[in-house]
Amino acid sequence: MVGNSIKERRKTLRVTQLQLAELAEISVNTLYKIERGQANPTLDTLTKIADVLGMEVCLQVKKPQKTD
Image (cartoon, rainbow, N blue to C red; front, side, top):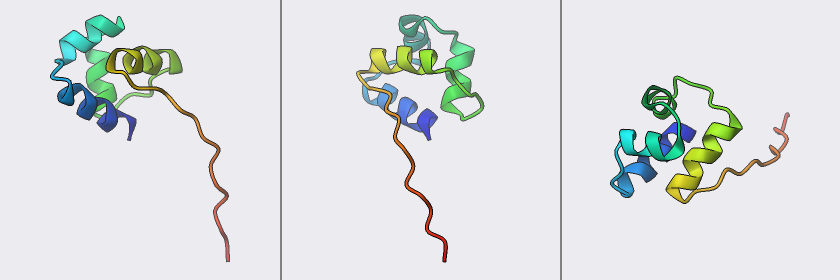
């Protein structure tokens, strides 16, 4: 889950939710919801957070599910 990855990276860097929200120019409430999986952030919001945390947003094509 994206929220878990953000939360773990934030904690590893010892950054508070408030600090990250301010640096990413988003609301603390938005960040809280993203980390808890209660929000569907825009790509722009994810990119802002990723930039601050030294991460990157990567989209991949799903592999087709095998049906028997």
